[in-house]
Image 1: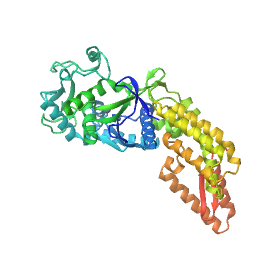
Image 2: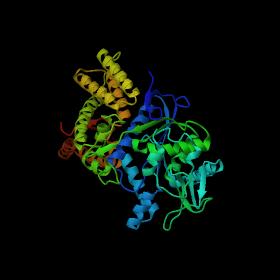
Image 3: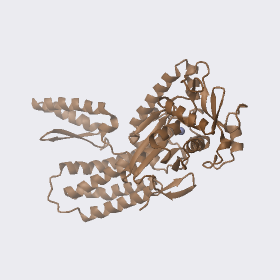
Image 4: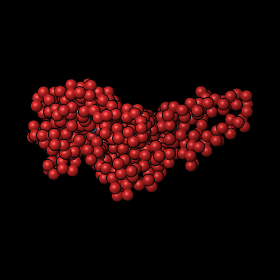
Amino acid sequence: MVLRVYNTLSRSVEGFEPVRGKRVRMFVCGPTVYDFSHVGHARTYLAYDIIARYLRARGYSVFYIVNITDIDDKIINRANASGEDPLLLADKFTKDFFRDMEALGITSVNLYAKASEHVPEIIDQITTLIGNGHAYQVDGDVYFDVSKFPEYGKLSRQNIEQLSVHRIDPDSRKRNVVDFALWKSQKPGEPAWDSPWGKGRPGWHIEDTAITTTYFGPQYDIHGGGLDLVFPHHEAEIAQAEAATGVKPLVRYWLHGGLLNIAGERMGKSIGNFVTIQDLLKRHDPEALRLYYAMRHYRTQLEFDEGGVAQAEEVLDKLRSVYNQFKSLLEGSDTTDEKSVDEDIKRLTTVAMEGFVVAMDDDFNTPRALATMITYAKDIEPYANRKLGEQSLGLIVRTFDYFGEVFGILRPLNVRQGKTFEQLLGVVLQIREDARKRGDWKTSDAIRDHLKSIGIGLEDTSRGARWYLASAKS
Ligand SMILES: [Zn+2]
């Protein structure tokens, strides 16, 4: 079976072949940290989180980088408006971004690379581009000379002259109207770094290629980001990197995610019609948001609907309930004498695994893969009453663990809610244990009943109490 992905560069579905065998180098455009992240960002980062998780589950070794744009006009404008220091403002929202990613269970990223921590690499790349005639200096600014890169436009396949009138700042000092800034000279009150062209700061596009060239070299496998970044951002990345290194193509597979609309308009900070991740997570389980997005293919445009997240929460409850039943059965199981896996279980599991892989191999078709998982849960649930042995139960639990790992769901409660939860529960269980020791069964039972009412089941074993996630409704 071959993994196939839709590549924006070729506008077609292609067989996936990384540059170096099973090693995958993957980069996704990160946030510009001038405000809280919203559910549109969540959709983007969750999509690539699942892609990275699936690639790993399929045996690839993935090095996944997301950059953090912490130097930018938007940050400076926002900081000036509120009288804050731009670098401190960016730092504050970077921390919020990390907190959001953690809350959403986005654990696949190997490196978050901040622009502010890669200024020397950025200066090096600009110096190379000036040296080989692809960039030029005007006063303290440096621009990329688009006329020296005839392939400019190969990713977006658009009429650059027409677009640039609207999308690119006209500046009479530029050689061509489509030329874009690599380095911007310092204006009063702006953060700045020393450079061969005087004090200033990097342009937006150059940070990505300086970072990827540093960690991946001149060519890598996957570049992701929202569809709105194709032009000019990704087009500029190709021009910069290919002009600087001479290696083509910079990226083998450009995987662009569909945009998220709200009330018919694109969700965006600049429009002000956004729902922040933190707000949404006050009302919904993070894993429900993961499922809500996984129910749609990552390349489709989507109208955000919070009712849909609530529906996903019901699906999640059902999956958890089936999973937890079998997990409890396995943990309580003492039937080691089962000779081989039950035939029905073997058949249902094989069908589910195959269906899942076929779906995910088809350009990461998560809606179909998720449907396979849901069908599996329905088919397997009746077997909870049929006294399966350890091998059968183990296969079922491992299968759920595999699906859960790819989608980032069915995580243990302590992982989902952070360490605090686990510690707090430890304190409660200790109080109950002390009560049991002095024969205070009333307190011990009351604690068990209270925990049950909030969805935490307890089982007393010879090694002390074991807790597990039960459905709060049951
Ligand atoms: Zn980017």
